[in-house]
Image (cartoon, rainbow, N blue to C red; front, side):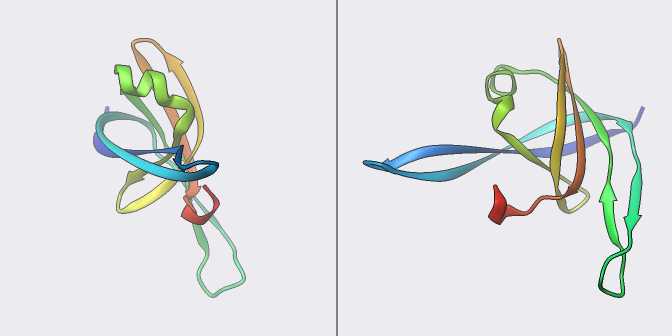
Length: 107
């Protein structure tokens, strides 16, 4: 099974002033097993097709990931931030599926 070093991106909303909430990004490195590696090309309106990564990763759960898994928004892998599609906690690990490029403006 192949391994990869990933950066997981957690987005939390914090109160920066009274009644003012802003997103805060926290990135943490993890080592993962690559369970499945797939790419899908979708024809777009431009000359080049859109590449959609559909990988599944398995990571050992730590306290931070266990408590903050609902804030997990993206995985930085292969030079791109990929959108988290689903998570499946299977103690002592968590399986994470990604797909599509993460758009930071829509977090």
